[in-house]
Length: 282
Image (cartoon, rainbow, N blue to C red; front, side, top):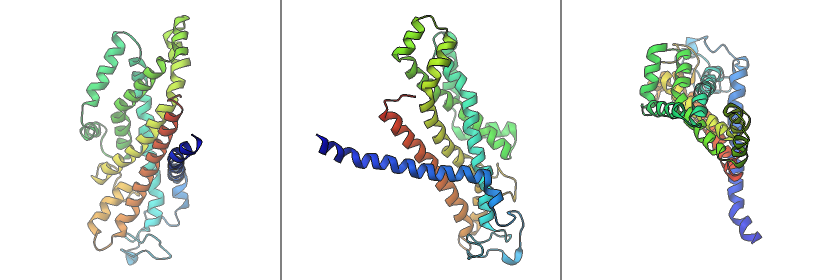
C-alpha cells in the first residue's frame, strides 16, 4: 500500500508545494514593491526626456522608454503601489463590509434570512455594472476605484463568510457551546469566527488577484489613475496605441499585471488545497 500511495500522491503534493512557493514568491514580491517600489525606482517615473522617447530596452533602461521618454522600469516599479495597493484595500474593505452580514446570515431568525436575501440581490447584478454604478457616485480616480472594489466585493465576501460560518456552526464543539447556554454573540466570536479564518483567507488571496485585474481594467478604460500617473492599467492603455511600433510599452505593465495576479491566485489555490487536506478546518 505504501508504494502506490506515494506514487499517486507524490506528484500532487509536489504540485501543491510548487504552487505555494511560486504564489508566495510573486505575491510577496508584489506586496514588497507596493511598499518600496517608488524608493527603488532608478529614475523619476514622471520625468520625461523626449530625446529618448520610444527607446527600445537597453542595459541602461532594461524595459525601454515610453512616448514621453520616461523610464518604463521606474514606472513599473512605482506603479506597483497604486496597482497592488488598490487590490489589497479592495479585498480588506470588502471583508470589512461583507463579513458582518455573512456572520449574521449564518444565524437563525428573520433578520438572518433577510441579510442573506439582500446579499443575493446584490450578487445578481453584473460585477462591471455594479462597479460602474459605484464609480458614478464616487467619481473616477484611484480613490474611486479602491472604493468600488471594496463595495462591489462586499456581497461576495458576505457569501464566503456565510458559507464558512455555516460549516463552522455545524461542528460538534460549537453545538456543545450553544447547548451550554453561551450567547449567540459569544458563540460567533469565540467559536465560529476562528474556524472561518482559513476559508476567508483563501477567498481574500484570490480576491486580491481578481481585484488587481478589475482595477487595471477600470484604469484601462480611463476611470482610474489620472493621466501621467504610473499605474499598470493606465500604462497598458497608453501602450496599446504603440503595440506595433513599440511593443515594450505594453509588455512591461502587461507582464506585471499577469504575474502578480497569477501569484495571488496560485497562493489562494495552494491555501485551498491545504485547507481541504486538513478537512476544511480553520
